Length: 228
Image (cartoon, rainbow, N blue to C red; front, side, top):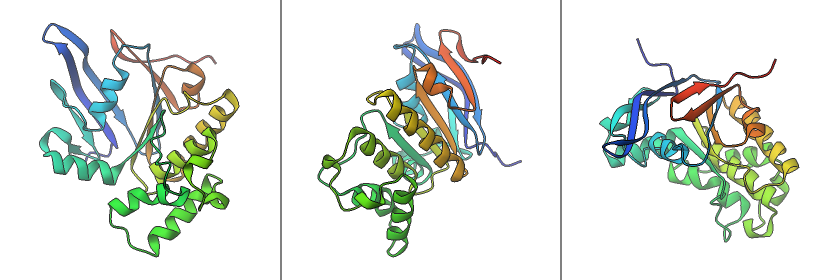
């Protein structure tokens, strides 16, 4: 039977040293349409986990599957291609290129995938409209506010219609009102694109915007009970 999960972790283990695990035997399945938050204190391995999910690091044991593809079975070029095609990233530090226009920043994933005009332009314009930045398409990113730049990052992460969106503390540099708007935008766009999303955060308020909340700690991953 085909693996229908967008993301699956199978006994994922990473160690600092042989006798000091970051985490051990993590198991997780993320289905299409699901938006999941993983919380945890500083130092529990959230960033390490994100690097493993993105194929930027390798586990000591266990497997990461994205759309059924085992990352450990791919070479570097294969992982890069899968990441480019199937994964969108939203970072706390934005990583938007200030010397490019808003439209050029958003279009970057499509250029890397060799999507030709006019489709590239149409998809860029559609995504800019979705995040409310169509009027700023030709402005340089350095001219915009922090909240606007984060919307560029969300548009760029979603413009190529990835199956999996990974968001790493995407509102850590934003004021509470802008953070709330950004999280709602991220959730809405993931749902509308019929993908799956994983939010890495230490903020309970941010995590509450997800469908489910898991906590990463020394016991591994476990579901957080929400107030009724």
